Amino acid sequence: MSRTATLALLFLLFAQDGWKPLFNGKDLEGWTVIGSASWRAEDGVLVTGQDGDPKKSGLITTKGEFADFELELDFMIDEHGKYNSGVYLRNAPGRAGRSGYQVNIGRAAAQEYTGGLYTNRWLAKGDEKDEIRKKLDWNTLRIVAKGSHFVIDLNGKNVVDFTDPAPDPKFLPKGVIALQTYGAEGHAGWLKFRNIRIREIK
Image 1 (tube, rainbow, N blue to C red):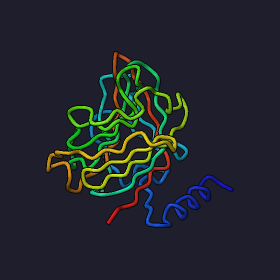
Image 2: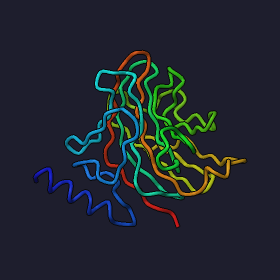
Image 3: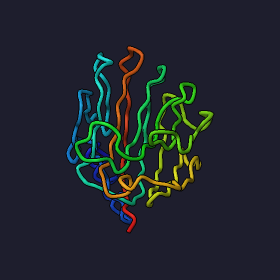
């Protein structure tokens, strides 16, 4: 089966049971790039990095906005230092930084906990001992956001089930989904995403 036919089949499967693919595997249609970091589609994978310049940073955001949803994606991240990323939930459209909740992707050794839930502080640290994340390999992240209640699974294992007892009201309405790229310690790192899909909760 050709690569195009395979992607078409995946889109058909994703469309079942209310799932909607967010990344078509071919280009950045449906997304908005904010900042100076590089984003590109490559063989069904969304690839980001600094192209040799660690000062580059930014986000890629959905054009659609979502409030309550189930989100799934696969990721693979560089292993250098404090290099980390994140998934911003209900972010303000056009905003270059985080404006809502963040589900972190990083290395616990650098106090950047994969699957951890963050605002201006850690609400839950997720895979705090870095025992579930696979290094330099694909990992699957599942995020369920319903109001101030969040369930986060990493590679099929639950790492967060948390209800924010005092949510900031601006964190709850619809917003975009944003993926973060991040350079650190003079190092231009890389990050990859694939199989990004969402199912809204009514």
